[in-house]
Length: 374
Image (cartoon, rainbow, N blue to C red; front, side):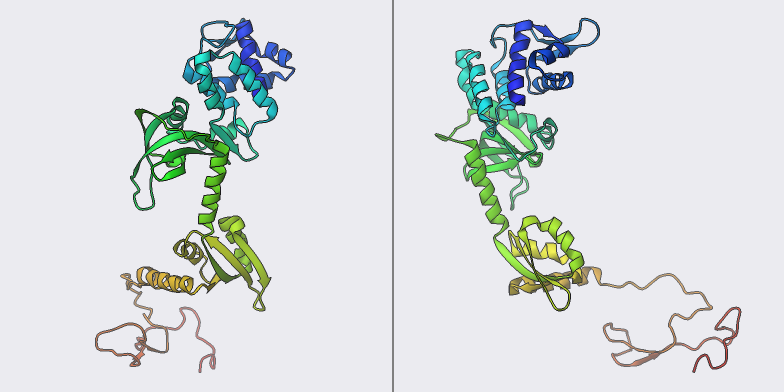
């Protein structure tokens, strides 16, 4: 396990004071490339590890060799445990973390243990690239709030207030599919905040309140279930062109269910969403390829959307470009004005195309064959 190697790497660094990637690789029985990645992971986690290039170079801990972790600050120890101790870790990793706790000064042990339980990785990809991605500009400030267990105020949009300020008690962080979330307690109960949507983070100087027997993994599962229920609050039925199925699948994922093939070649589908307004707005983009069959309020909403779109985009503008003298503005034939109002002309009044000038020719090069037009 990578976390086991991180612990072993740190202890080996303290014992030797100065090591090379080759020495570490031989000690841990891994490749030099893996050893170098582990050293870089410690540095990213906030452990004061630095490298020197050239002859006599290698990796060292700031301040020289140590026999314990007394040279680390509380925040540095928290960062190490946060990086090495996600709740989804194996039992072996938990054993390794317990061993590492014994090397931590006694006053810092509760903080280290809390930090080891402050991260959940929800998903299969637990690579460094996945963990580092999607944090946003306030990622480190949110991580610091979790490690320091300090109450903060967040700028975070709400449905009816895009500039809302929240006062939260940070409890942990979750990385899901490369996206980071802060799990925090608020006046409205437990909720999650996506890091990239946070607009500001300001510490209050007050300690965060932590519920008794709080478990981050359980809290995240409950929040995810609530989100899933909200995303399936309403359902619409529709008949869709088979060419739209792939795009609908990408848009709705497992919230789309494809039914039987209709006699007209279309497919019956059902799609779930958080509201009729959002669902109909999404389906309206498919135009005639999707015909919503129910519920009635969804069809009524789409009809209103259609009228609104026509009102905005259906207006025609008379061209300001003059037609060439040799061409008529109207094709041959008689037309009736149906949907527009023209001064002096009423609906069903015949409008004839103007006569051509005697000098106009039907063709610039050839005379049409006799009998070609009747």
